[in-house]
Image (cartoon, rainbow, N blue to C red; front, side, top):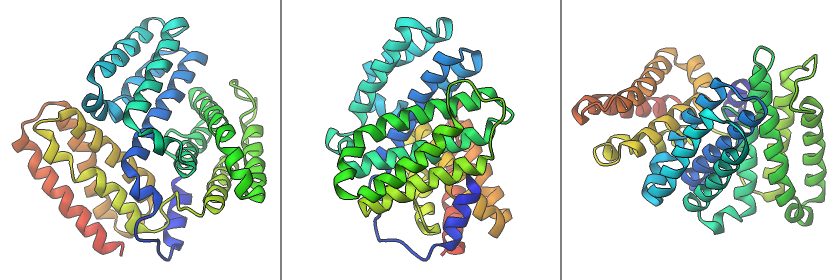
Length: 324
């Protein structure tokens, strides 16, 4: 997937001042994390394992800080249910987890935004193309059975979201709907069931189909859903990186949420390009974005985190000068 991102960014000529994905960066990253939690639950249902349970625990910190602020009791219930799933990954506990996750999304994302067609389309794009999403899962499926199940489960969620969005887009762009249906059909052939086929196809087919859906959604809505230029990609990373130290003293879980999301956005949108253009700067940023979450998890004092935050800010400023 990163190859496609790098090509898109290097070929871009510019973007509007505040594209949709930047204007709504925070609710979109929360929706992305929550939707991937849904996907992880489905993976656990179809392929119970310690790895699948651990993946849920890894995903939860991406919304836990924000949910603490909105509804700490709900977060406590969700955490308890996920712990119970480790012992019994089936039946009513799984249904309870789904219900709590739906309530969490309602708490985290305003209803008006959740019903916005552009927001719904952006969530579909994230599910298809993000880290842990459909195209990346299919790419990893050659060596990991669980990665295939994850890709398949993500695709099922994409189809559900598309079913809700399709009637609105049908009125706006019938041709766009046909293109989306065609590309989703390709993904359906690649991911026919929860059980991996005996022989997988070229992962590029999944990447290409995911991009086709993304571009068709953008065209149908006349809305930019993906970063097309390097400054916008950098803005996504910076928007998550800058609050880390300011919130750390009082809201450690929120600081961790920001730090982990900054790390993910860096890998998704900047790593490939920056590794090519400025390898030393890439290594520096990657190291800082790895070290800061580790320190937060270790309850490091604020004074131990501040030098890394300052170094991260300086490295991002250097990246901004490089990527202009």
